[in-house]
Length: 106
Picture 1 (cartoon, one colour):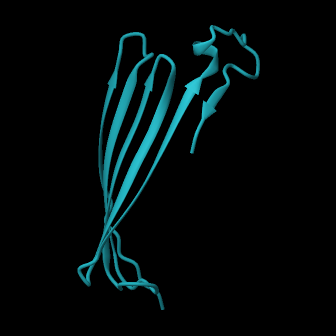
Picture 2: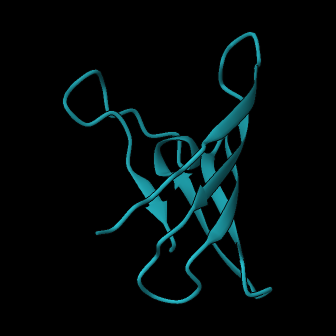
C-alpha cells in the first residue's frame, strides 16, 4: 500500500503595470512526501517559479530542488521564453481566432 503525505505551501507576488503590458509573478512551493517506491523513501521538494510578460514576449522559469532523507540533493529546472512575432514585426492579426504568433525555444 502506497501512502503519500504532502503539505503544499505557496505564495505569489504579482506586479501589473497600468496598461497590463508588463507583469511578473513569483511562486514558492514546498512538498513533503513519504513512501516513494523509487529512490529515497522520504523527500522534500522545493519549487521556485517565475512567469513574466514584456512588450515583445513572455517567459516561464521553474526550478525543483529535491532533498532526500538519505542526504542527497537533486536539482531540475526549465526555462521557456517566447517572442511575439506580432509585436516584433508590427503585425495585426485582427480580432479573429488567431491574435498573435509566438516563436519559442525549449
